[in-house]
Image (cartoon, rainbow, N blue to C red; front, side, top):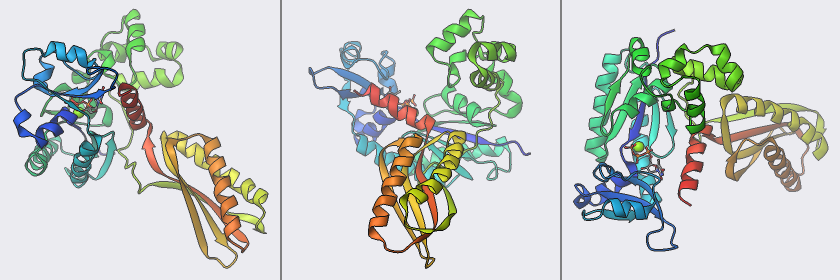
Length: 367
Ligand code: TTP
Ligand code: MG
């Protein structure tokens, strides 16, 4: 199999950069974008800050009053988040980026993976030129800068993009992966948070290289099978996750023929129950949640009908799926007279777990 060439694009100090774009006079000043909780004038937290403000120790997550204190005596500008505006800019950029990729996957508002293997015929030299071209195009057309990491998989691309910011371009070829990863602290790996890295520290594991060399059996004993194996692979730069569109285009569906033509809800739900079990398996394997549930009914005259329902929050709870399918069929049976011959269940509007987590954490950060 040909080695993959994967890019991770991470927009620089995104909310603050959007504000600079809206008002270029901000550019050389410290800019802080925050969520104002409204209790007192300064209560709330920093969402992000431009790199001028970061020199003063201002960063995502710190309280606004502290940011104010650190920026005392400067020309700092404080602004409230304007999600809608940032989303508009993000949408335009993502649309542009999609055009450069064989496969595309947006993760959160300011990050995206591009699989460019075919586009560059597997060449990391060509990938470097392509990354530079994308940076220039986006800068010229949309006036936004970003940092990009290029590697043989998503894991390496992501860590590469973090290693030079802002406006960075970091290439890690397959033969350079070990040398690149091994000196970095373990917490640079996704899934190694404060607790885990403390625990690893006690085992003498400080760097990704330490973790890569650590006995995998021991890791499995300590962290369980899934995590232990994941840590071992990640530390060795091994990651086979595909770059996958998670937008509306995708869906998972199953259709099956009923034992007899019927309008009996119990018979229909018995059949859809099996389909749901099947869908659930695939869902868990692919680690996605969905926001829309649909039903399909093929009638005795062979006409195809469908109904769908959008959920308030993305889920992968099988109980929610069962309940929604039941409600949709109850309603559908009330609206149609014909008997049903085949039934189907479909889920769509996917959200990757990683992206959902990011939404959740920014939700907590912003409240
Ligand atoms: P990040 O990409 O983590 O940060 P950034 O784009 O501001 O800066 P960098 O140059 O380091 O990439 O997050 C993207 C956006 O998500 C950020 O602009 C604001 C929002 N965000 C929050 O609201 N709260 C947070 O704690 C973080 C980390 C981000
Ligand atoms: Mg960013």
